[in-house]
Amino acid sequence: MQAAISAHASSLEIAKMRLRTRENRPDGERVQDQAALALEEEEEHLMRSITKLHIQMKRVLGNFERLKASEKELERAIAEKEACIDTDDTILAQMSELAEEFAAVLEANQYSTFGLRR
Picture (cartoon, rainbow, N blue to C red):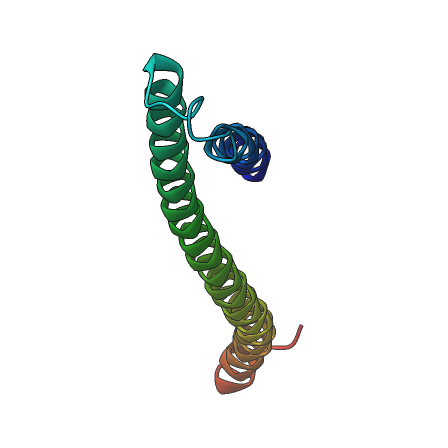
């Protein structure tokens, strides 16, 4: 987009230079002919185009900044969720160990309750 703005700005400068050259002619040669009208029209068109491009670029940059902010928020949320998953995995592992220990205790108590030996 910046390249398009630069290209239009270069063309605009050329059109302005040609208009100034025509305006600096002696009075007898200075006329409002088709060439002058075309240059003025081109100048107006280029200025409108450059303005539109600036507006579009501002929108694009704003969208880009919002996307970057969203990306950071998503990265933060993912890191938070990964930390929660790690915590859940740790808790599940501990619960599994406790369940095995509890099962072993229950089994030992069954044998001792009935006077059985292993």
